[in-house]
Amino acid sequence: MHVQDRPVATKAEKDTTPARYAVMGNPVAHSKSPVIHKQFAHQFGHNIEYAALWVDTDGFAEAVQQFRAEGGKGLNVTVPFKLEAFSLADNLSERAKLAGAVNTIRFEVDGKIFGDNTDGTGLVHDLTKNLNVHLRGRKILVLGAGGAVRGVLGPLLKQNPALLVIANRTVPKAKELAKTFAQFGKIEAVGYDELVGKRFDVVINGTSASLKGEMPPLPVNVFAGNAVAYDMMYGDKPTPFLEWAMLHGAETAADGLGMLVEQAAESYLLWRGVRPETRHVIAALRKG
Ligand code: ATR
Image (tube, rainbow, N blue to C red; front, side):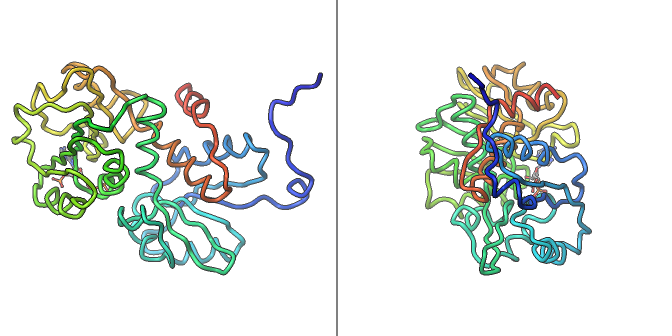
C-alpha cells in the first residue's frame, strides 16, 4: 500500500498562485514565523507563501494597504506595530479589544480589515495543552505591565484562577491593568516588595527584562510546591528568570517558544479555518 506522508493539494490549489501571508515588524529578520507557517501549510497541503517583511516605523499603514492591494490574505503583526494595527482594523475580535492590540490581520472579501489577537490564547494553549499546567483554582503571578502582559490577561482570567497578581516596578501601570480586567476575575496589582511572603503556583514573566539579560527583582520563596515558571521570551539558552527559577524551587521552567507556535496556529486557524498540529513544529524548532 502506498502511504502518503502528507495530504495532497487539491487540483485547484495546484493550479493557482499561492495565498500570500506575511509578518510585518521592525526588526523582523530573525522571525521564526515563516518557518512555522510553512510547516503548518505542509500539514494540510495548502499552497501558501509567507514572508517576513521589514517595515519602516512610520510606514505601517501604507505597507498594509500595499500588501492587500497585491492580493495578500492576512498578516501577523509584531513589535512595534501591534497598537497601530489595532487602530487600523475596521472590526476587532473580543480578545483583540481586551488586549488593546492586534497581532493578526485578516483581509475580508469586502475589503475590510479584521483584527485579532492570538497571543493570550497561544500562551494558555502552551501552558494547558503542551505543559499540562492547570490554571483553574491556581494562584498566578504575572510579572510586568506592558503591552505583552495586557495581551494575555483576558485569556488567563478566563481559565478561572483563584487569584491573578500583577507585579510591576512601576506600580500604577499594574494598578491600571488590574482595574481594567477586574470584571473578568480576581486580580490584584502590587510592587515587587509586596511579594515577600507570598507564594504562587504559576509565575509568568511578561517583562522585557530577559531581552537585556536581566530579571525582575523577585523575592526568594515565591514558588509554591510544584510551581511552574514561564518566560514569554525565548532564546538559545534559558533566560535569567528561568535559570533563577530552577535554582529557587520551581518544578518546571518553560520559555515562550511554545507560545510563539501556538499563537501562530491560532492565526492560521483564523486565516484558513483549520488549526495545525503544533507539538512536532515546536520540537523541530527546538532542534534548530
Ligand atoms: P512590552 O510591550 O514588551 O510589554 P513595554 O510596554 O515596554 O514592552 O513593557 C516592558 C515591561 O517590562 C514593563 O512592565 C517594565 O516595567 P516598568 O513598567 O516598571 O518599566 C518591565 N521591565 C523591563 N525591564 C525590567 C527589569 N529589569 N525588571 C523588571 N521589570 C522590567
